[in-house]
Image 1 (tube, rainbow, N blue to C red):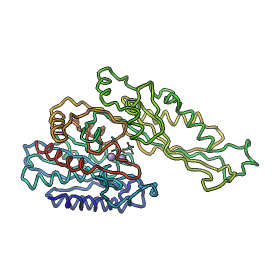
Image 2 (cartoon, rainbow, N blue to C red):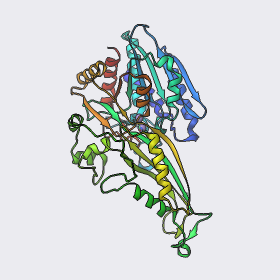
Image 3 (tube, rainbow, N blue to C red):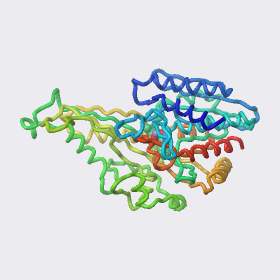
Image 4 (cartoon, protein in one colour):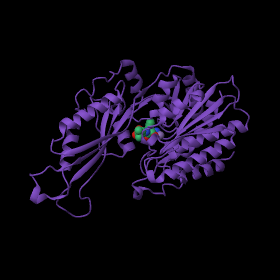
Length: 442
Ligand code: BES
Ligand code: MN
Ligand code: MN
């Protein structure tokens, strides 16, 4: 097994435009499935493809070495985020490019690169006859759209998954270059799309301004009522009711992960930062949040046009923390929208996906062994951290199978996931393969 072999495989994988949110590219999702299936078969795995109508399939691949050995589950997702805005990319998004010691391309960091690392770590162990454990790959194709069918899929696969002793979810990043990181918490997320319609057609703003509602103004008003951007607090009644107060012990642990404002400003490429109750960089991990992701309405061409559009649409989500319940939050949001929109407009609110927050115990032997190997390979102690991001699979696997879950990964803070110029440092990539080989062979 050579680096060239790995890179060629990686390059073929990145070429497949498996953007799960784009219905028109469903055939690319199917391509990714057969691409991975063929490779897993070549390694000697038995491969099951679980399917549901219109949903990306779940790949379940099993390699039993010894019924009495430990069984390791390895999770990754083969779907990626859309590549927009394409003009901001310095390289073609679906062409794996090596530049400045990094791999560039959509999905290289999130999460195709990690899948490649895992596959080749296992391939190498098989070739060297060092694989003693049983391995189960769980490769998902709808993570980036909220893992809507994941729970049903993994319930169907109970016969295989209930035999797993530990789950490795390789879909996060390192604290810094050469500083490995294990996450013990993730935020949940609930995602909505709201359309507000004022009538049948667009209107002249001079003739009708003051006499009709403007749907953009209506949405802006609702958004402003949802969150106070000065305090960062969400204003929806009862929203914080179930939020767990953070304990001193955890706070002490998290203080070790703090980054300076300067560092974070540089990392995010922003002119300034916000925070909640003075918690600086912990604000995005320990508190829930509310963000709009897109507003579609009206005239957005060059120049000016004085129109009151007939409708406007906004996409928004809430990130959730323990012990907020996505179902309860969903009901609160419907109630809040109903109470706060003018009676004279028509509206439709759709919840596109929801997933619960994840929090786990890291005081177990699996974590200890993993942390030791990561330290040996990268030369620095592991940082234990919480992330503001979400991976629905983590909470689902923990709740259903009650086994240790280890969340780690090898990308760097400037990996640009979900953004143009997504990248994976190649040194960390290959060291990561080495670390995974050692982790899966203990
Ligand atoms: N791998 C990320 C989540 C992540 C990013 C965890 C950084 C830790 C650090 C995952 O692919 C992701 O982006 N999840 C989505 C889920 C959503 C679309 C339901 C997210 O967090 O926005
Ligand atoms: Mn991911
Ligand atoms: Mn992602």
